Length: 224
Image (cartoon, rainbow, N blue to C red; front, side, top):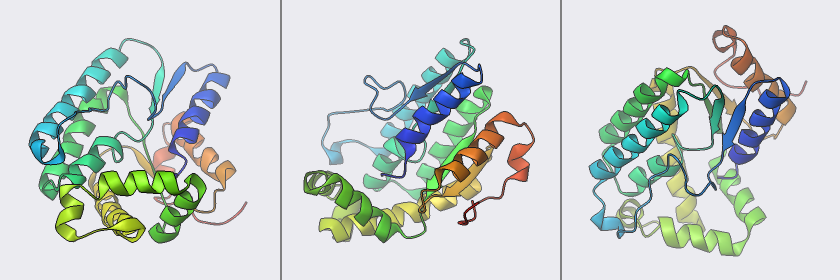
């Protein structure tokens, strides 16, 4: 949350368009969302396996609709954020979550995807910073929603500290998923908000077929 996903999505689409490449940015706020699967059941009435199955069906439908148009889709947060976070909150088995990710990656391979993974080393500072920026109302919303989940309830997570603990554990999961996934990918530690550096690395990965193998797994936190 607050890592810059939506801003990056819009900026990538703009930069591609400026180069004459048709692109569309699909942020989390798009409604109806072409990928995210939403439901109205209480937490404990949604089986994780059923959620995973429904989410994968949405991904496959999105891929089918995206193959014909000659444009690039930049999708904000739908692999590791969105429904994967919900699978964690439902206390889904780690093997189920990993299998879900592998199945999504298999589904999207016809689109020649690139995974861009934003992360920050200090999860505590990152969550406190976005909480201060977005205010008490946002914090209460996050706490009241996520910490009533089966995952949080079973671990006794409460308040902002509980939310931070949740995201430390979530981050450990996504780090492992990122390492294991067989997909073109780059990892960017962006706590310094040096967006000119990050944008350059993303652009090289997008525009150069050989760039991905040349880019380090993580962006060094140094200035140009």
